[in-house]
Length: 379
Ligand SMILES: Cc1cc2nc3c(=O)[nH]c(=O)nc-3n(C[C@H](O)[C@H](O)[C@H](O)COP(=O)(O)OP(=O)(O)OC[C@H]3O[C@@H](n4cnc5c(N)ncnc54)[C@H](O)[C@@H]3O)c2cc1C
Image (tube, helix red, strand yellow):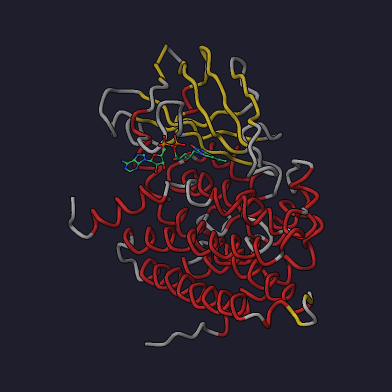
């Protein structure tokens, strides 16, 4: 057993971290969060680096990175904000679906501009009555001659309002709880689609939306892959998605803890640095220990995936634990920074807000526990 990254893996992690420091940085992230703006320049620069194609097959113009390289990427892009990471990662999973199941024409129309940084994707599963129980989704797609007709109300669809975005919409084409779903590629400019931005306290740069499909008419080739396989296609990238969330939480937790350490070393009260008070010192030591454990869980899950083994339990364990560790680190950071934690320019309030969302997005912590228990044979 060897806990060391290879030279290539270290170099890759360093390259993405250095990109984030030079090309993104704290001020840019803070401003885009405050102004609810998508980091368009960063998205384009990442496209130029070829990084948007990390989960796309090589024959489709991507680089098909292994899960360890992908986790290193997500850890680095999450260092300032989970939202920044989501701005990049969200599109990548639909790109994987298109690369695996799309026709030559769908790849030309959607993948080529995405890899060039000119187009994005969002994923729409959730509905007002279908959250954790995603299979309760009711939106329908009905075949009508040369077209599909979609109706329904989707909610929490991140990034659906952004220019040049195509939404991967999960809709019912049959009665089966899981095999009754198909996946449709819906350009957000399609007539009959009404998109409304939601006023969330997180995902402010990516933005989250509710939308209504009112007799949305789509050509037959809007269907991705086969009828009845939508649930399966979404499930194919769930392990990657949960791994990516856990890895970006580790990256964000590292920054939050480093910020806390720096602040408590600099700030003096009663004539000594805050860090010298045992209560704060011990809390930071505890958090450092938890963070190390969280990181090991991420790379242990990634290694299992890279070996081609089933890692459903390990990925859920990583997502559950990393979200808790980030939350504890950000919560303690809020306390350690005293009143200054309330100012956006100290960044801690953003880590804290986003940490809370990390316990919900991509499947709540309760759902992760249920998955882990099921994998343990406990029903
Ligand atoms: C900012 C944001 C962005 C999002 N982006 C997207 C997106 O891009 N696309 C998309 O499709 N969805 C997206 N979502 C939706 C997200 O996946 C759901 O919010 C999440 O799955 C939980 O669903 P819910 O909010 O309806 O909560 P509910 O399912 O109503 O759950 C409420 C509470 O009950 C608990 N609970 C539910 N069922 C069980 C159970 N069986 N056992 C124990 N506890 C349970 C939950 O854990 C939670 O604590 C986003 C959500 C947010 C907030």
